[in-house]
Image 1 (tube, rainbow, N blue to C red):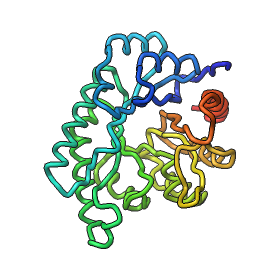
Image 2: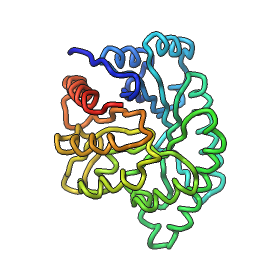
Image 3: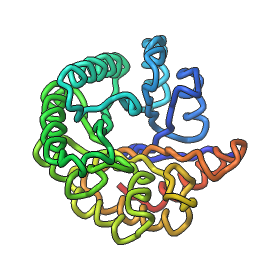
Length: 277
């Protein structure tokens, strides 16, 4: 596989998750493939038990940048329980401290609440919007002077409605990470609705998590390799983003593991050629 030579204006990222085990090896792999930044998804606290000096040395030698994501499965920033929000903020603070040590350019948090389908039944939507706004305000006030703070678009919740998500972003002052797989999921692969997300959030989008969505028997599932039509639509949307600097590849479905990196390189070349910053 021939690596890709990226420009230094748009950063194309390699996802480092808990399953890869060794962050140092993952950074070296990302460099070999041609990525010019990495994104660490802090799925487990042991991921922060690493040689910080070696990470910083590699990033400097490779002229790469780094971003971090806080846990997504166990964090509920719009919990109805104040104690849960305090605990979640402590976890985010630990992640931030780690990110600061390794020179992270951004801190991405996940937008989740804790009642799911019962929100509408119990008329809790407005309460959750207010809780999420206040929690995001707190996160922005704590960390935005040190790194970019983004909130990620979810695939299924009240915040999968673009107007609800836009509301908490505008009121909190937080920037945005568009997870395209989640948008394909929430819009059920509707191209016009997909573009609408970019139209209303254009000025706030700093980070992209790139993947496609594939229709299954019960839903549109995220994190598939994007098809050609999806990639064309996404590329056009990316070009119109005013403040976008980071595009991280986050697809792992719909391709055999041995062919994943080959497909990443193909898409990386296409985006590098078409997105001129």
